Amino acid sequence: MPNNPIQAVVFDLDGLMVDSEKLFVRVAEQLLARRGKQFSMELMRRMLGLRGSEGVALMRAEYQLEDTCESLAAESREIFFEMMPDVLEVMPGVLALLNRLEAARLPKAVATSSTRPYTERVLAQFALTRRFQFLLTAEDVTHGKPHPEIYCTAAHRFALEPCEIAVLEDSPVGLAAARAAGARCFVVPSPYTPDADWSAAHAVVPRLDADELFELLGVANR
Image (cartoon, rainbow, N blue to C red; front, side, top):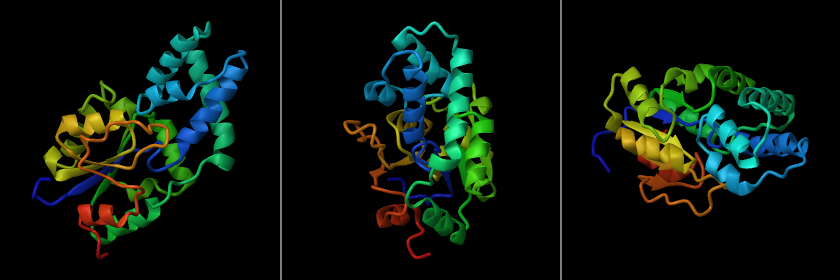
């Protein structure tokens, strides 16, 4: 672990801050049921951390769907946003960690593979948008995770070196992106990746308000 103190914290969104992955499964199940097909958890594991367009393309190819990627994405969004107000929840520990970081005056950002309209709508549901200095979304980068671009961009926006930021992730794809950028990465494992290799992470913690994570981020006594 580098000795220099963490100067900023960058959060992934889906599966880390909100339990959207559970909702994604329900959306995919409904989408495929309309076509007489059954969604598999193995495909879900492969989709974790990818940009929405990449995930839709993967599903289309896997199930040999005749629909265009654009029409599948539009139908998925319609189902998702219909379910979202009643189903989507904040993940355990999110608010406690945000409070600790704010007490320590550590700046925060979101770096997600999701689109900006989606990200803003999800964060707004829980009044979280203004708690972050900036949001980086799929539209802000050329290459999605596991490419390091989004985390390199986050460090640049903070005017920091990547090794001075802490990245919080829940997927192997996100971990790979953070480590390739040179950032410190702490993982809260997704339940959809029980056999994932987290050996590249600087630490693996059970939830965002874990005492170990507070210690690692330097906010234990806040």
